[in-house]
Length: 210
Image (cartoon, rainbow, N blue to C red; front, side, top):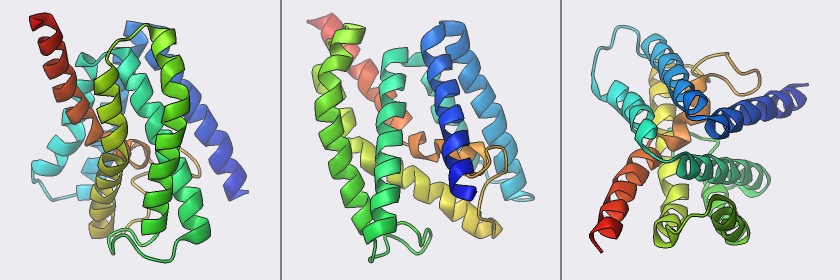
């Protein structure tokens, strides 16, 4: 039952995210306003009386920067992040023997390596179609994003796991049955998004100066 809930509500979450990203700029911006509001609420509950600013900056900064990144790049980021998370989860569950970190005991080196390889292989297959569909020319930028994404996704995941460990809870909330809270779902994009923002602005500036 828990596995079926995870799959069903996971698919609903994915469809909502993709719809909001691709349908219009209004739904795109509204999505990140809602995500930021829910994430901050969960973090306030998680951190309780701890008023340090840094954890909130880690969460809110990428959700603000997302407004200034193209919908196409955000779409690609989510798809590749979900690919990595899913493959790392299944490979780690099946073959994981070496813990990645004590902060998150369920994470394994086997999951990280397997998820990374699968993400690279799947990226190789879908990225050419992605360029054709969105008429994009940011080839080197996309390649760099693909290379770093498994590692930034893992870093974001471990970061939120650290705060959950401090709070002695398994999930950041109960909003998504089988998955936990919003922070449990967006932790993997927290470090990827700022890097994409910086890279995107640098790349665009370089293109315009040519």
